[in-house]
Picture 1 (spheres, one colour):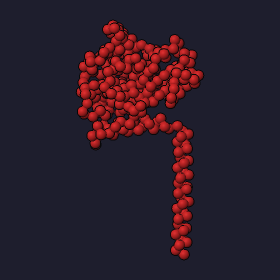
Picture 2 (cartoon, rainbow, N blue to C red):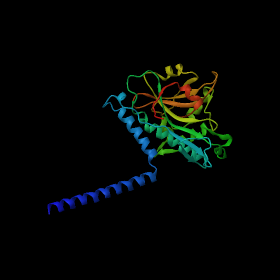
Picture 3 (tube, rainbow, N blue to C red):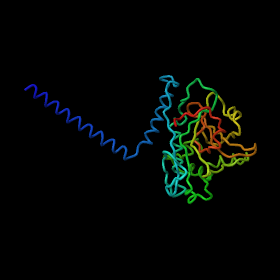
Picture 4 (tube, rainbow, N blue to C red):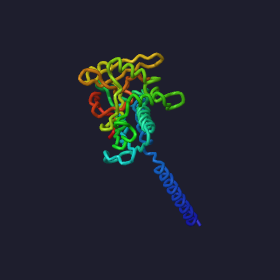
Amino acid sequence: MINNKKGDITTQQIVLLIILIASFAVVLFFIFRLNLGATTEKEVCHNSVLTRGSNVVPGESIPLNCKTSYLCFTEDGSCEKMSGSFDVKKVTSDTETYDILANEMADCWWMFGEGKVNYLGEELLPKLYCSICSQITFDDSMGQIFEDNKISQNAFYNYLATTEISEGKSYLEYLNGLKNSQAIEETLLTNQSAFGEIDFNKHYSITMGVYSKISVGQWAAAGAGIATLALAVAGVAIPVIIVVAVVGGVGGHFIGTTVIGESGQQYYTPSIIATDDYDLLNCESIKTLA
């Protein structure tokens, strides 16, 4: 009787184990069907940033677990310029394109703590430490949507200023505290600079960074071809500085803004920057995985 009872219990355990395995397999199936991988990677990055800046353990001992995403924008789905693994973003209008770019910039800001977290640690050189959140390519078919195969940065930043990321707050306000893009445009014009364009013949990245033990003015002076323009706007809670790429010492084009975050650190906010301009930022290191 005892042996039979033990046998019955073992059989029940086996049946229970099979049910658990089957249930787990069903859950995994739906996870893959819902394509939650990209979201999960962004959450993993965000969590590693928060952990690194928590002061519970030395930040330097915790690596950032952040990966760069690779995006191809296309109207016809071809993405002929791309090779390897990448995410196809098929769009049919300028608004769809702006929306995806805006969300990628907002995700980048969120992943790295929205200016609230000092994730650098202490023992660092006085430099700008950069993170590339996304690499972006536009295929030839995007010319069907945008004239001359270019996106006007002015038009895009107007979209950021007039489109809400949450109730009562625009993308532009979320990223750098500004209510509208006109203030940026006017500051650029005053300094003989311009918004510039996103040229589909170039490769771009959505990049952000944080400064360590250095003022923005000192950093800009150390970097070749960079100028910073202070922007004073009534009603803005945080000071905003416009970063401009200068060619030949005269004029220049917009490549981003910097703000002082709640952490007290100065941040280069998420910006769409051409590969040609990236070296001008003079980044000390890339705080993302390949």
